Image (cartoon, rainbow, N blue to C red; front, side, top):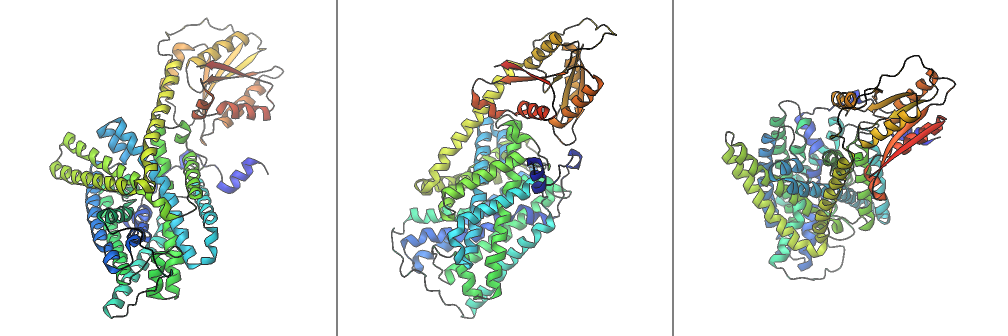
Length: 616
């Protein structure tokens, strides 16, 4: 079985571009699809706060700080939700942080927001998968030694599902999402009922004693606050996906965002309150949610439903949110020239396959480096989230001052408050988590922005070297008719640039009949190409080939076969223009169409294939 057969078996048949359509979601379905990342954070946010506080002891006076911290996080959540409601109203077509920041603050803030979001999406997959597996192995401890392997298996399955182009079906997502919401409110309700009836007893800690390693200081409390702020991750997803809603899109998106904020706030506050009431002490062998569920439900089926099904499934879906947003963000950056252009191409199943592969690889590397430990990855998490929050909200303030539409003052105040609040939290996160690993993201964001700028500079250099703007229109003597064709040639035209012009001149020098072919995968400006072609290459016929499956190679092979049948007894020369970058690694930024095409022509036993190189 060849590679193409294995690929089709795993991913399914290639879909035509005409099948590309976007599913519109009801509010209830959109809540499940777009809020799974934010809602799932309650599975680990309280735990991360307690892990920080327990360093100062396990007494009620220490762990009791989790409640004020939770109230502070809820206040921040309200501010962020109200701020993003303004973003949705201003950007009814979808207002991601990269688009908002670049459009209102300029290129550099936009790139910082884009880089922060990319890092955030990668960390979302790593954190969600590791947290889901952590809860799973808490109920099945015998599997804990296989944590990393299980994480990698789930990443592979998610990658495979998304490469197949599985649509974010509302019905598919609603079952586990609402099962998680229902189980959390049931857990909170039963836990509060037990407390009111006096049926509460603290679980003895698994470890005999917890060593006090720090004093309870303002710095430690702020560190616990920064850890708990992971509960806000994913809040921006609804503002990014406004067009997924049924009309009126922005109105429904605002309603769903408000509902998500209320549900998230109640669940997070409820879990934190119960963890304090039941005196839950975190340990390395079991998650806080598992300990709390076991204390409230015992080892009944409800416990296993929460820990083995509802929680791992919602966390898995939270990781899938990144698979929807990361490739789309990469598309925008690649379209603008800041990432390799391969990331802007639709794959066989009408998804941005290269973005999905990149996300999976990066998340898998993180899982291996941190050994699947959620607590070890968390310190890296919040920096990117709150950086993009701050820049997005600051961009919205600038937007309102520029637009000055009805009610703009109140909107500007709300977004200004959101920008200040998230900036303060960002400073707290960096200050308290810098030595614990946040420095990695603080260093990584400028490096990613530098990479963006370097890639854009390379593409600009290539465009300047290949441009034919200064070429004046050319005229040619008409070809004599009735001559016997003995040396026909086909020139493959990707874009009309210096390299293509030289390849066409070479074709004229060796052939007595020349045709040119261009494959349109849905991105060609035909009128512009035809106009410029008639000005420069009017003596050569240009055939524009349709490619409903976005393949460049297949239409060329079909054309070459037909052309050779029309010219029996002679050898046709296929000429492929190719430009050669200054450095070998710069080739990675360009599609390797020439290599794939030459390999395919060799398989079809084409006799003469020539590459005309243009050196940059």
